[in-house]
Image 1 (cartoon, rainbow, N blue to C red):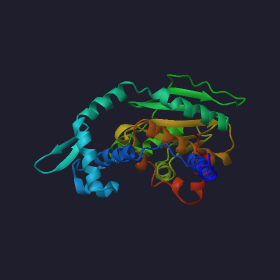
Image 2: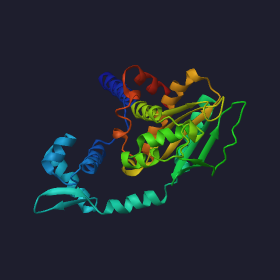
Image 3: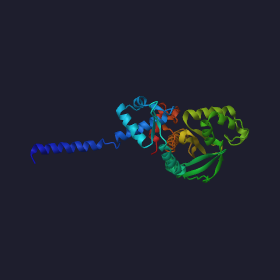
Image 4: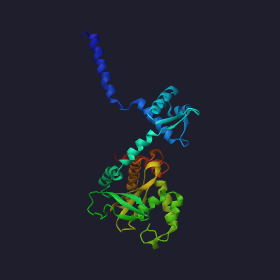
Amino acid sequence: MRPHNLRHLVKENKKSKNSKSSYHPVVPAVDQACRVLLCLSKNSNHKMGLTEICKEVAIHKSKGFSILNTFSHFGLVEKDHQSKVYSLGPRLLTLSRHFLDHLRYPEVVSPFLQDLATETNGTALFGLIDGEHVIVVGKNEGNQNIGFTVRLGHHFHITLGAHGKSIMAFMPEAEREKFLVKKRTFFYGDPSHLNGNRLRKELAKCREIGFAQDTGEITPGVNVVSAPLFAQQDKLIGCLILMGTFSKNKVHEYGLKVVTLARQVSIKLGAEGENLYQDKGMLAGKDRSLIHSSTIH
């Protein structure tokens, strides 16, 4: 091999090594196609023209046309040939039904409960709304010395303590008011302890920061934080709960962790990640760095 060819080979090897370090396993064409589908799914009118789609996704019209034409071939997108607009196709129903048929909430949430319990040494619970109750369908205990006898299948009243406040805070207003006018609610344990003005302030605060708390009012010595969980179409389905004997000065820090995980779980369950907790205090200022540093993968 001649010297200049050898030098050329060395340069090529160096290029290859450098390219590996910056390699990202994303196929641009597939990425663009996925963004086209997501663009159509987020449009409130459900129908969009080619120019509008390409502008939103930032791709050339010829590329957008090819993507949409391919999707139409597989029934993932439909085109109205008169108005020249596109909408999501019926084949997506088959895919979504398959996903929903095989979705098991506890299986999805379980790894998050384990990570949360391990990191905080608390007991992490997944509660699913069932009428006027919350059923514990997932549980993981940390390495704390004191355990809690909360069994799978246990029913809590939907208004009880921290989880009650987190659920009520994110309920549709009309539905929430039906609960708030009831004489027997358990936000502070005994119904006689209810303070309407205090409760409404706490619900507003929960909507701002994403989580609710109970510092020993339901069970003395036990602190609880809770954040809501959402699924498809951002439907409120339940809550993530962390309870333990951790100190009160840990409540805010752990509350932010719970919100972070609740958002991740909600995305896994089909909620729109971009719209969850976007106006909450957790995304503002000094809390932002704490959230990123405490995210559990």
